[in-house]
Length: 339
Image (cartoon, rainbow, N blue to C red; front, top):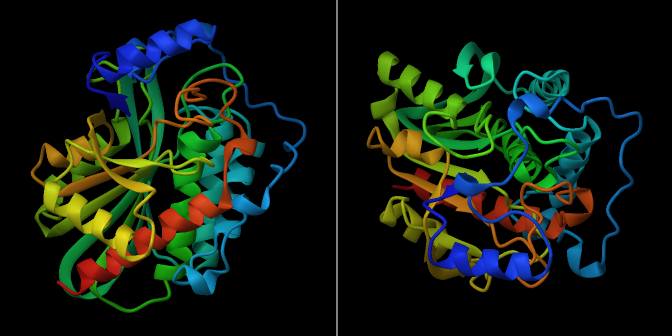
């Protein structure tokens, strides 16, 4: 994902970051990272990281309070991904992650499809895989959920929040939804290759997996069946505040944020806008109503950032936040099923 440019808010944030002696900024377009050729795969992790110390405030509510969504199970999925180490596209660690995702989906009784493809990137041709869950409904319309599961190609970057958190949420949603009968089809996409290979976010070096899937749906005729696309990305921080992403389809943003408020999460899903480039744009460009739920203000007070740094580790993740996001997605799907 990426802010539109390093302007306005990002300029102010970068000034704070530099003042504090930290590196990086909230914009992939200017993310000061090593080049791809200088960032080897770092997947040789001998032991899993210790579990995050959970304060009572971080503990997930019981599933019966969140529509059945189990935030602790989602957290366990994040921990498993982190245990594999950094997971950039084409790495052995991402292959482990793919196997884990597929094994979990099989255990839930989900019907899955794997699209293996090759992408030409600034670092050469890289093999990638999209994973798609298909849950049948009575009518031909499709509600599409999605996340990317790869991590930025950086040394010692395990991506607990980006994108471990959203992948954990989608796995838990799959566990619940694959056993439910519904009016419309529900598909859940796990995209490879969202992250830019080079340090900067510059088209077409980003969103390889979502672009591939959108094009494939266009060729098959499935694209016109999609009623709504709900994307999650960076959804696990202990201090969540999800702004309304301004590229997203307004009616769909209104639905999701309205659901959040009805569920009592209005202080977390806030009425402030921000533009962020992400996988949803692969579908917006093809006129699919889409919304991106993402929190890039992921510091203790919203001004100290671990995004795209080695500090994006398991201790940053709150099972409670995962449960809240999962609850909102689950109820949003129910709302869309009734339309």
